[in-house]
Image 1: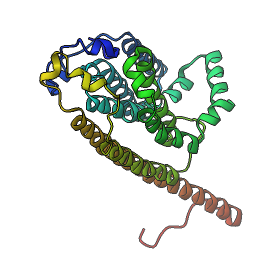
Image 2 (image 1 turned 45 degrees about the horizontal axis):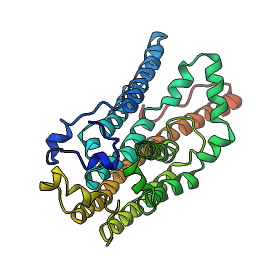
Image 3 (image 1 turned 60 degrees about the vertical axis):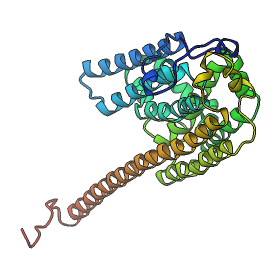
Image 4 (image 1 turned 30 degrees about the horizontal axis):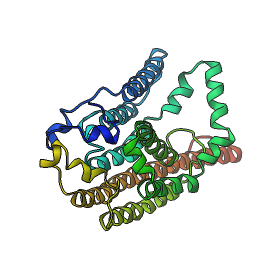
Length: 319
């Protein structure tokens, strides 16, 4: 049972009542998810192996982050969560948050661009460098543009005909998943600042951008909860006429739950990311202080050598 289904087939579905158990039991074989996950993990693993074979070290934490991101992508698009994403708006909203926040953030922490630059042979590496320095990369990596796309695209998704179309078309549904990951990547990748991408900014501005996303998620969630019309039109009420009508919740109650999920999950992930950025900021400041201390020590030795010809620093009184 795949997650990418059209509305007509939803009416004939006979899924059991939604709970945590079915999330891990209603798995489907979705070609796009399998291909992306296998290639993503496989290519990354090849890069890590190439690094180790030549004696270089690749941080284990980055490999774990990449694995978590790929696993989250596969879970969101192939598990029971995906099987119910056109049946319950609340299930779709959990999927939305995983694809737009958890997946891009985890993949960005995996630093795949850095890994590729260190392991690709000459010509492919030159192509990657050309892409990173291209005008397109600079435009897409421009922080205000990435921020605008990230906070405005959910409004476009739920308050235009796009979401209705995703319930009626397999292709549009797939493209919605791709869009959520892509926009999240455009926003998170430069802010994480691990890979050498255009658009990287100083740590204070990274923290500011993260904090600014919190009210947008909250406002969108509250707006969805306060809607007097149903997202998806007649799609969700029509499912009550089928075999699942005995357990499906009231569409308005489910929509209120979906808005609350968007509000709460957005704030939770945003706060976690804020903590990650703050830790990065502190570590960067400590490293900068160490570099400055070393620079001052070198300057002091050079001045002493120029003045006395003795490079040995004077002994402290306590010594």
